Amino acid sequence: MIEVRDMIKNHVRYVIGNGKHISIWYDKWCEQGPLCEYITRRTIFDARLEDSMKVADMFNEGKWNWPSEWMINFLNIGKIDIPSWQDDKKDKVQWFTNKNLLMDFSTKQAWEDLRIDNPSVGWCKVVWFNQMVPRHAFILWLAMQGRLMTQDRMEKWQTNGTLFCTFCQAGPDSHEHLFFQCPYTMEIWDCMRKMTNLQNVSYRMDNSVQEIAENKVQNNIGMVVCKLVLAASVTIFGKKGIIDCSRRKKEMGMNYARALSIMLG
Ligand SMILES: [Zn+2]
Image (cartoon, rainbow, N blue to C red; front, side):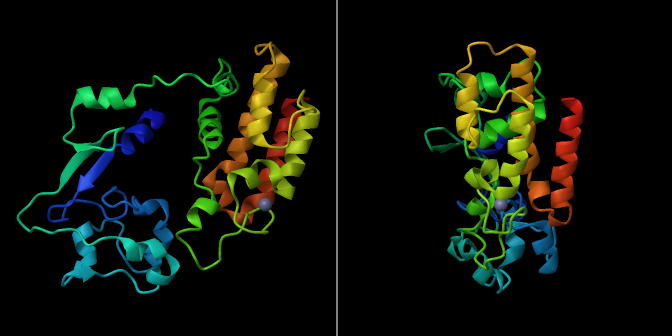
């Protein structure tokens, strides 16, 4: 369901009438949105703004009223166009099609846009299999498409140089860095490789997935464990909550390594 919800969210657009019913943080009403992907609740709170604010609440006397420090820290904020306001016009929810057209919602169009008719990729059997942990599979699926909210994607919004890989602090993290070029995650991944049948796979996640997919036998116990370990590793390092939580970073990683060692005997 979460997967479907995310797919639908990508198609929903909020068209401003008077801006009184559209959440400024959580709805996608501008090209750069939704703003909650970049502006955290903590940042909103620190600026003494409300979580429940509507778009109209940030507008005053014909211009945006963003906190002044945001204009430096979040460059894209300054690029948000001023909408054409009409006090007597209602806000509207519209459907954004795969062909980049904005239209009123219809179940027919939604079905056309959401049904998956792409040819399956070779690595899908490494991500989706009978014994998978659905949550881990979903995170791995996102990671394979470079769609996790890593710091290199957030960096274009935050220019104050405060983004560092939680594990090594060497610079902003990225898919490539986290899986598994970072010295810290690489060390743990190396342990995992040695404990399973993954000794010969690459240190890069995308290559590892491709290499596992090339095995003719996918369903024996050894291969299933390998796939479970890979997805669990990507989840533990890719999970934003963990990446953001520097206080627990190494403890989490080590507890995870310990738990997996016990599981693998
Ligand atoms: Zn790192």
